[in-house]
Image (cartoon, rainbow, N blue to C red):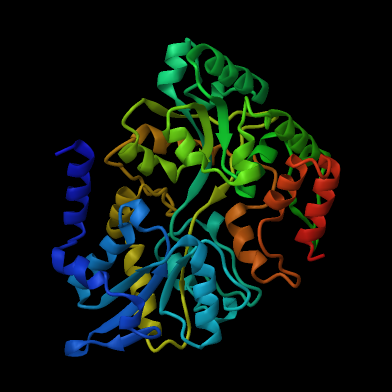
Length: 424
């Protein structure tokens, strides 16, 4: 048995994830309509709709199994593809058939006013207030389920082969020019195909803007705005998208940056903490390492993660809140974070991970020392759902793709992004 398999087995036993529990959790959406139904013996069955739990070791499914052992109540985990969850919840809201619970990465204006107030749970369970955003009426519609941060990975084997050094402490982080020079040295000396790859995501590019000293389209009053540093970042990003430092295929054609890095042909990968669990399990052919992000003016990252929400009037309102309260108990939440490779959102909670402890600690140091000038990324996600003119999609990504395709310059790109953020 491999070390990772052994760790996964231990973690699942700690959550009480028995064969019976797995079987019960595998029941599909059709087994239970709406928020909750009465099961044998009067126990409730509540749906928890989410995406990506399988990729994170089944941490939510394991928590649900442990909750059933403790309470007799079934939390039916409905894991849908990431691309489908928005549509699924929209359709459920339209049909007045929302689940009791969901773990989402964003709130939708269509159903944001159908969320229960979770402020009492957040206070009782010591959720870090930096990540809590109230609704206009003062209620708390969502609590972050986990925290992620943009970060950098290097192919240590390629760097060592090329004899190129890399920083391991934030105080010694590369400048962007030093980083680009280093990955191109690795490409030339170690035979890598590309110097670096960055996910095709506005979330990742926003982190780079923070590093260049931009506020990355923070709100000025009630309107989103831009600065010259945003233009400077995009000009630099365009320069390194040249099929050598970076492959054009990721941003222009949607090629998978994760797969490219795991192929062993890329010196560095600008992605984030959510990759640690995947790489620990699936990269076998070379050594990899989490290293500090490069900087232009400041050390900065961009935060993200998921949110736990409980919907109103599902027939299981109180039961849903009871599960969320249980979920954030220190012992339960620590096991969840360990199994899924998640960073905690609870104040002062220390998690000892069963693998890659140094990587997780580096991410937490990056978050603690984050000098980003822009909006609080976690709060912004919630606040945007209540905006008078909400935007759709990812304007930063979509307009940057146009720039890389040659149809507009960086200044026009920034101007267009501001218009889209402001609902034009």
